[in-house]
Image (cartoon, rainbow, N blue to C red):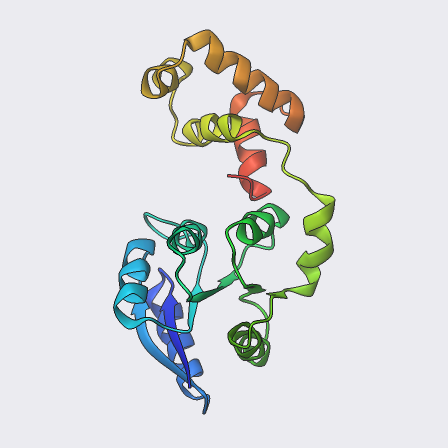
Length: 200
């Protein structure tokens, strides 16, 4: 049996996936989680073969969870299932040691096949994302990404400077560079562009 922990913040979607997976003769859902912290706790408790997780969840994202499991040396394989066909997310997922990345609008048979292949030690990527991932490299530095993430919260340059112990001029310089890289007219547009491409 392939033992699975399922992490998805939408209760209806989580329940539907759990029921569909439990219909498979070789798959059992040993626990479900509604956010990243619950997912980590469930993996620690149940030691599943595969963690099937969404990306965007409250608290820690699926990518955060994958990174944490990788840093711990946890043998659980991670399969991302998401609505976001963004090459930036895929590249970050691969960097986090994720074993598979599939889209929610794929047929359930494709999801089950991906689950079995990930369990068997393969790496699985949705075909429509595979090529795009290599054509769309993230141009941002970690610091630029950090500052743009702050911008998405509505923080002013002064707020960001205080929070990150930087001079306000330094914050402006980083954001200006990020705007230039992304062809954005202002910092909000830069943050939105980076988020849409999966770089935040």
